Length: 298
Image (cartoon, rainbow, N blue to C red; front, side, top):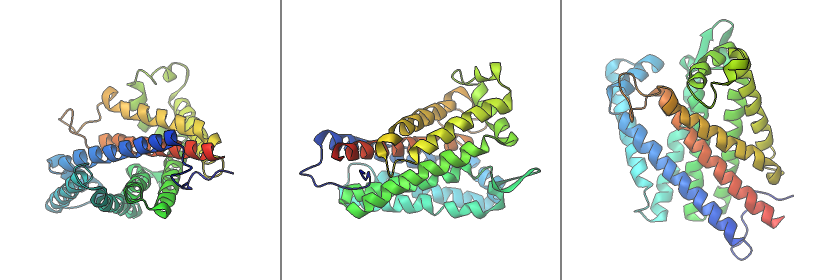
């Protein structure tokens, strides 16, 4: 049984698979640079502080300070991943990027991250905290880049497992939420405004359309779940995940997901939530490359 997290020696690694994986990691680095610089720049604008006041309950002064500090950190990290630096330096920055994303996940403990409305109340009914689920995969991308640039085989193994877990966490959890009324209403606006999804509402009601998307996401998660043991069987699921993330990112252009009172490129809460799918897309491509390489060794 091929192990997609294994690292073969250069002498037996297939050159085409090596190139594919190198391109996947290069794309992952570019995505992280884009997200960090884009989100970082938004941290200096008033609506980022207003979002922290609303979701974290901070005072306006504290929210402004936190938003500015986080923005500065993200810009520094994004600049540190640029290919102008030696790989060893970029690797250290990538490790800091992993920590940056992962250290935000404990915020899920805040009641503000969960739905607070009967019959949905608290765990497992995520509201604003859905974006934090994506940080597992985003952090694994940073960790994987550190291992990739430093040639750390054990680190690569754990990074791939983290990317795999990150895919499952998002697709399974948010897929299950699609069967709730509040999530069905939440995605209705996105799907009705998209020419690729609006047709669903011609034959289905709001809940039915959401249920169908949930079934697709859960089927995708089930296939990806096989990746660790049967990587070839997981490839259709990873392809479905790539298509899903490409489509959801496209919601930015069919539905107003920009900061209130602003247009492109000012992204706030919902826009940043959608853009994080680019990181999950990059993670899925890395897993595809690892599965293909494992397949050549089988």
